[in-house]
Each structure stands twice: as C-alpha cells, then as structure tokens.
Length: 56
Image (cartoon, rainbow, N blue to C red; front, side, top):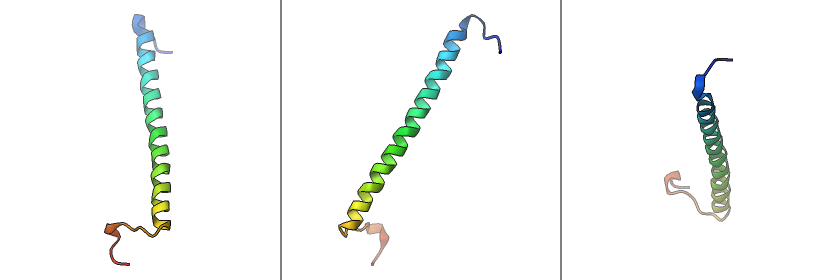
C-alpha cells in the first residue's frame, strides 16, 4: 500500500466521507426519481396531462 505518511488517517477519512456523500446522493436521487414517477403516473391516471404534451 502507498505510504500516506503521518496524515494517513485524515486522508482515508476524507476519502471515506466523500464516498459516503456520493453514495447518499445516488440513493437520494433514485428515491426521488421513484417518487416523482409515481406522482406522474397518478396524475396521468386521473386524466391530468402536462401542458407541454400538446393537444391530445
């Protein structure tokens, strides 16, 4: 392994923190996308369409 010197614990902690933050953002994005997709499906089932969809 690479010798990180006397600051190894801080370097490893920084990498771990960034990895955790990126993983949390990925999970949050996927959960939010699922929530929005369900809401859109519900609106379409009720007959409410997007204005940008054009005339039906």
